[in-house]
Amino acid sequence: MLGFLTAVPRPVPVPVVVPPGLSTPPADYAALASSLGVDIPVLPRRTLAQHAEAATLASMGVSTFDLGSVDRYLRSLAKKASRKRNLRWVWKPLRKADVAYELRVGYNVLVGIDGELDNTSVYEHLVPGRVLEQVRDISGRIPGAKFYVSDYAAVDPDPFMMFITEAALHPWVFAVWDEPGFTG
Image 1 (cartoon, rainbow, N blue to C red):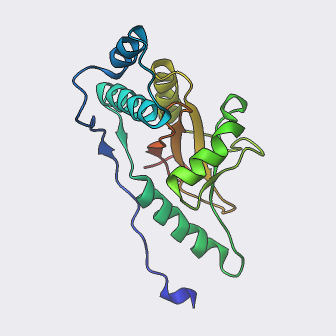
Image 2 (tube, rainbow, N blue to C red; image 1 turned 135 degrees about the vertical axis):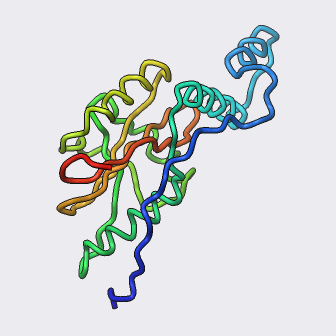
């Protein structure tokens, strides 16, 4: 039965594109609306936050992965590794500061993927220095970013790194590496 599994190619990152439609930068727009007493409903607020995050990532030259492609890839690896047991992949917090129970429901409903936020423990493996440098740079520019690493019970998974903020509830997958040995 598992012989029918076709290999799903590992996703390739693409540059972040700032969505069109706002002539005023999101932070300036929010400040202008607030100064005029205009309340911005929740969904447009998330859109503004997502635009701001995209603009920041684009200005930093960060490329990201399509979350649906990452999900399909990790699902295929988990299925291949599990053989007879039902193995799922999850997003583990990078550090204790990234544990965010308030994101769990909104995140999973929003993206509808297999990988859930698993806040039961932090990621327990080494992360390449180049990825930690990206975490440092992104967290310095995007307040409230919570960082997660894809994980499942396999010997040599291909971990992906993503962040999400409560403001935008948009997962940005920005790094991947091979295990073991930090290649890729």
